[in-house]
Length: 150
Image 1: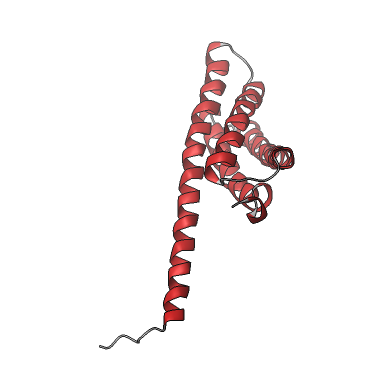
Image 2: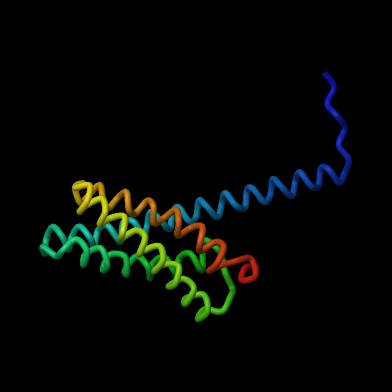
């Protein structure tokens, strides 16, 4: 079997695609690590407030997500997306994306708890996974878009 010969341009195109894939993979990996950090911060606060201080799951959820929001913005802006855009503009966009994602997450959490009667702990986890996926896509495309990166 003989493999077709590739021209220099074809090889360069393949290398560029490979480099782009590797860069995207690294970015998703970093986002995942930041997500793990956010998850630990958010869940720790939620569970401490609900288990030790008997705070309602909705209030604990809001406080936990607020702490995760600050952690997330700082790490994602500076490390995941390595953004150099205007901080004020990005923080506004980040907050907007957060509110959209949080609203959908909270609605799902309430549905899981109040309508489907799922235990609060797994319900929090399911809602958090949904939030994370939506948050990555919106932040990549809207908050820290290509125009704001080196």
